[in-house]
Image 1 (cartoon, rainbow, N blue to C red):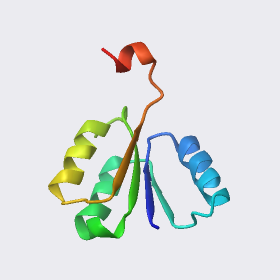
Image 2 (cartoon, rainbow, N blue to C red):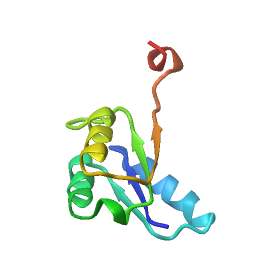
Image 3 (cartoon, rainbow, N blue to C red):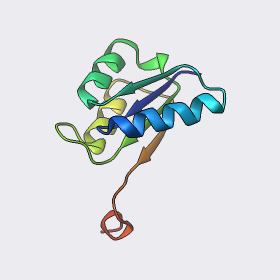
Image 4 (tube, rainbow, N blue to C red):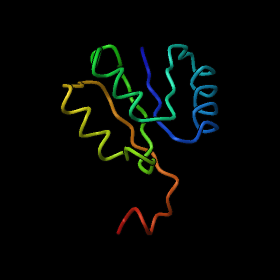
Length: 91
């Protein structure tokens, strides 16, 4: 299973990559810039089975990234994560 992590916080990528490796997932690509992840998906959207995407990122936010997934025909699973406070997420 090929996983993609998209988060502007490098520490979050390292932490999640390590946790996923402990669970047996060794094919994990991490991107601190959504634009870099989008470029990969442009060439091989079907080569990724699961995407973890941060909601709040500079340049390209999580919502725009998810729209790009639809645009390239991504058919894998998606997990949207956020460090935002619950009050902000429910607004």
